[in-house]
Length: 282
Image 1 (tube, rainbow, N blue to C red):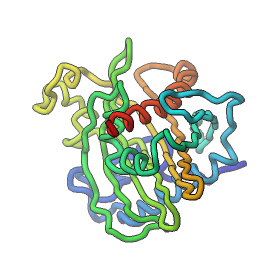
Image 2: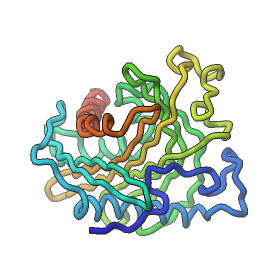
Image 3: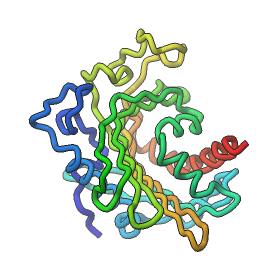
């Protein structure tokens, strides 16, 4: 089934000229999309992928994966998406969580609130998370969602054997108004020339905030897009967690070598999050 072609949610990175105005990005306040309209489009595209494409275009693997200490089986799904003349390889997972897995409150606090900082804490290969800028989104409903936040961040990953990677992403979070649930949309950014983006501009090697040898290492700029959607069934006390992603590590690593590793990488994140929650609970 054909999917609606996205304007923003794709693997090709957005530049500051395509983003709402922010002083840290040094983009024009006159030519940029309005913050509300931009967020509305990103929300629409995130919901299209997580609510529609995941059901109609993704194909599920025959077997599920385990990801301890989480008890829930993890279903892996795949989709080759074509946008204009570009091909994107999307991988997704679906899991359903009941006690003793993380509770709904755990998901809200761990995935929706402070999403990037928490991800850096529970993902072993992430060694730095830097906020480049944050927009002041008005506290009102946008596309039947509220509590909308929008930030630009740099996430740094240690990759075995090859050079470290930085993924600069736009991160939007939003809550459903009508029922318990939220989405997190991440879109790749090209922040070359943005002073606050120290890794994207390779200034981390000498920057005052690079307080460890790891943070001073050279990085390769990769690309990462994703959507996470969590909903809560109050009657069954069950959390449904969907995540879909497309990524390119760049640095000369061909896609045919990257694709086979993706199912395992996204499945293990379920266990990482469950372990993170266990430690928080004490």
